[in-house]
Amino acid sequence: MTEKQKRDQGFLYNANYDEEILADINKCNDLCHKFNQIKPSDREAQTEILKQIFHKMGESVYVNTPFWCDYGYNTTVGDYFFANHNCQILDGGKVTFGDHVFIAPNCTFTTAEHALDVEQRNEGLEVALPITVGNNVWIGAGTIVLGGVTIGDNTVIGAGSVVTKDIPSNVIAVGVPCRVMREITEADKERYPHYTGE
Image 1 (tube, rainbow, N blue to C red):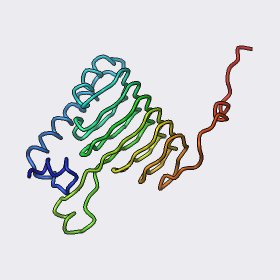
Image 2 (image 1 turned 180 degrees about the vertical axis):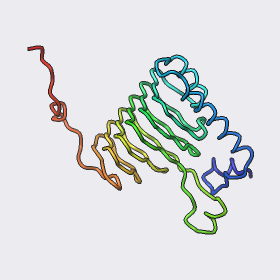
Image 3 (image 1 turned 45 degrees about the vertical axis):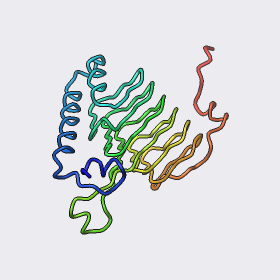
Image 4 (image 1 turned 135 degrees about the vertical axis):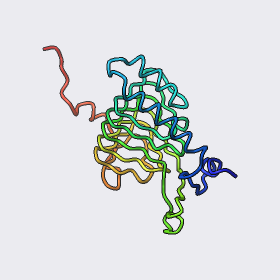
């Protein structure tokens, strides 16, 4: 079994010296570099590069530079996806974003988890655990989402959170580690002032 096959089946694998894996990473890193050099106002050119990076991409996808991704082909983004500056996706495992996902600056999604055993870790062994983000999710600035996590629909993750476990739908969650604070309710429609035209 190749290292890539081990990775894709959830086993410990070694990405450090495997030519196939390194070639995949180099290809994606070069595409990200090319993307990051494009003038920010040239959204059309950016979109063409993103189509080459992501496995699947919905409509109205906007990503602000700089952006980095390990493989790209393991990441799927839905419609109306927005990632602000300095988004990083370490997608050795599958990373799936639903529709209407908003990601604030300086967020990291990392499927990579290194071995806890020191001998295995020093050998370079790691595992890739999937990440799933539902529809209508807002991820606050500086958040880190770890592998093996699912974030439910309509949820808000507060700034600076480290998401280590699943977060349900329709909640506000925040902290290190990230925990549910409360459900989102109809009262939240009045959270911010509305302009009435008067």
